Amino acid sequence: MKSELQAFIMLPKKNKLNLKDISNKEVYRGNTWRGKFFSAYFDFKNSIENNQFSVVVPKKNILMATQRNKLKRLIYNEISSDLLQNLKLRCIIKVFKDFSREKEVFVVEMKNFKTEVLAQK
Figure 1 (cartoon, rainbow, N blue to C red):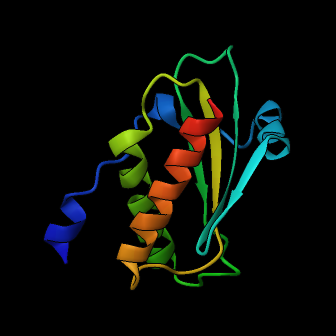
Figure 2: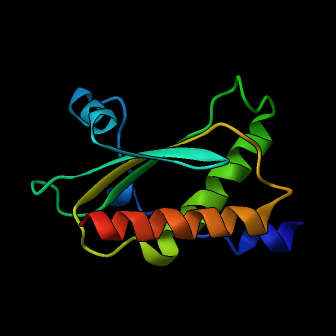
Figure 3: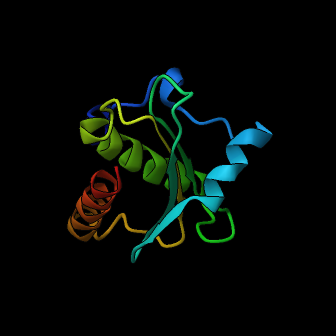
């Protein structure tokens, strides 16, 4: 299992969206995409330099912290592979179902989300 986790790439701090900042909460009023495992709220803001992402995994949905962190790493790894182009995108991904046993379905769903975002731009 350790070799699997070492392959993950986390996002740099400049690409993380700080949800404590009140102005970033307006992302929830932007575009919405909903899939089987997660929903995504995103908008395009010209005043930011880099794409910014945040992943929210509620304790209510997934109880174990290790599982929540693993899901976050999976999503950040998937984001870092494609969506770090200069789109001036702000995105909040909210997980509502554990997808660790259905990774292939998750990858397909993430590809659908990426094509939707690129089509919006």
